[in-house]
Image (cartoon, rainbow, N blue to C red; front, side, top):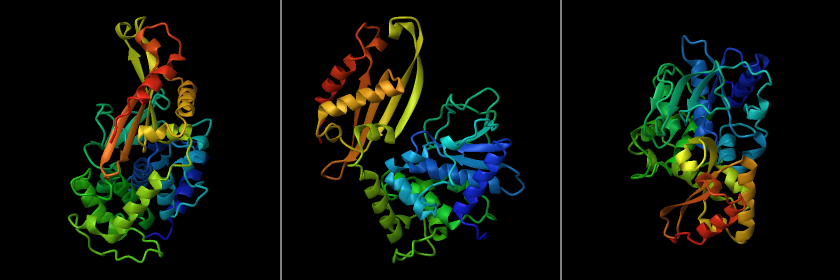
Length: 368
């Protein structure tokens, strides 16, 4: 096995990519929300593409989150540090690092299966897709592999592909990074939860190959079965730590909460819906790990103003806020709030009406 660390490998890949202005490279990218699964699966799949025997593919992961915004996800920072990627994160390729004359035209998608318009320029090709979300049916003639199937974590699907090359030796830091993503997405591989067979099998394969921090005086078995991986002490410790990091968000502002886990979409509205001629609108979806009652505390009016500003900043016609949290009985709960520009429905009210709509929806927050 190579003695090169994952950090040094990523740094060298980045230097080479920038020196080539991306020419003849494949960019591997996760979805724009930038969660741990997107980070790990993109880095893992880029590593795989660059190491497949008999292949001369040059691949690099593009992290969709600007480097300055990494602080919004403490769980990502913890997993990156576990993988030996230092705090300045200069080894990672972020959007602000892309050269002005970026010559890369080949993309591989993980943790989503539709290339955003920002990157879908004339001449671009999607040559691989690995995802666990709803299949949008694209790139069937260009993507190989094209894997879109249910899984608790996309990183499990990437790991399964790595497992299919028995001569490859995965870096121990990368094994830990992929395992971290699987653990957080499946709530510690909880039985009866989101985890399916591929998650258990991938985790059982990764665990003996992952680095355990010297400070962790825990029993990590050398042989782990898919059936027993959930009960491993190190897995449970990792799940607890990642979950604690993910929910430690009391210091974040309303704007930070909205952009922490955020995706944007564009839709074409028919004249029947909009009341005018057909037009395109932009919709945003923010996932927040808090109940709406907490999201609007302690000052509902301040949260409303911050939400309005975010809508204006992003040029949105619709904003959805999806909450995901556990109640006092440790039961998972979700709430969904929609803030809609009434002009979308063809009325003549001003964008200022968003404040009233948002207030009305807040007072209707379900309990529990």
